[in-house]
Image (cartoon, rainbow, N blue to C red; front, side):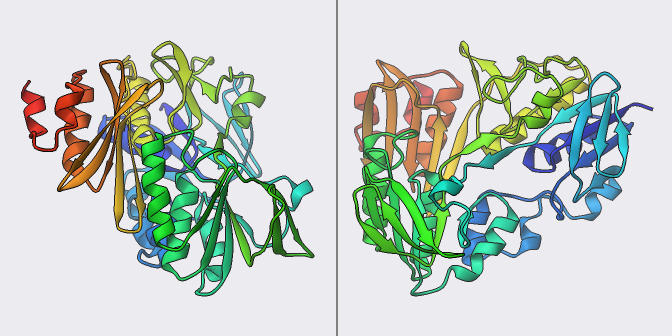
Length: 401
């Protein structure tokens, strides 16, 4: 009987094994995870879960009995030491598992501050998994002072929770503006104003020089020479793909675990999906860090492991919740050269163009703009920017144009 093993029990891994069963695979399936809990949603960790609005069980992607019901051998708290592609063997601490096909859905890991600047002091946290947030949660109390390092979406979401909980929050971003790598200046301006209105002290063009303290952090020295007292620190400095196992096994690495358009790695029996995997798209080897990509790519790999031979053509979308604002993003804005602002009575949206080609949309509390833009992008349609920018024009008309 054929045996498919999946290493990495996150969103991509859970989606892949579930899809194998719905696609009719009747062989042996093993899902290996390093954490002690079954696969769960990560986005709510820095939002609803940290706020206390969501229980741990509600985070779970599927009930625990699902895996047993579907004859999926879920191995939790299991550390993979190495992969032997020649023998098609996976070495755990206490056993060796052989496979016919293997999928790597190992995800990503947060960048940490170097120990040389105090990154190993107590009360310095990252926000990536359940254990991270559980360790940090007791410190998120009214009146505490927190420093957030990094003005991307993770840092801003953490700042929003801290502000809502009544903490004194300072966020530093070494780039000229928050969200500089991922959004337009207009979107940065919107979220800067939003956070400032909620009492967050945002300092742009300012980096962290070092953290100070004995065993636990007590203050931070910033690059502008200022010093602030802090009770704890949240680091939101981005993530890197978890590709060590693949690299040690001799697989090709390029911006993560390199795959072809079908999700297959440089070893014909090994596949990859999710944050850890890069794939060819529009002339480059790229990765997408999103729930949507983790699900779609993993399900495609499951079908291709069954012989479907489908090429991956992603239709990217993302979201972020901050205070009472839901940001929804459709498309990828790389290469844009102008932004059209649509300020309608029912919401605000920023439309990214390269010349006359629509690339992406940021929609703030504007689900209509998001859905229309998403459908336009999927249909490869680019509406007239003047029409988009006129709030009196019905967006749905663009779909019929």
